[in-house]
Image (tube, rainbow, N blue to C red):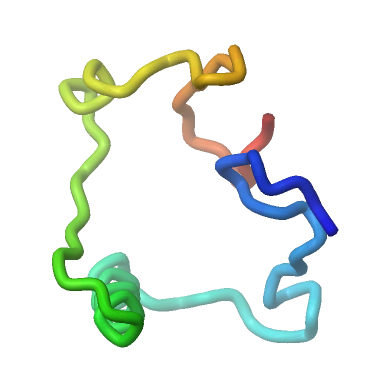
Length: 80
């Protein structure tokens, strides 16, 4: 199986497009409603989202526990 110590998840998972599906076309609000429903289905109670602005970025560590540097940017696909 793939590596699981990555924020991007296992590398063996295929995107819906790679499996013949279509890209998600919903709004961020629709996405949050779906996420909330799934988390509540599995027993979660508190679910929320925040806009990642410059003030919030100041509160996030820039180096993880393994020494990897974390950078923010507008990209199509996350990279490590």
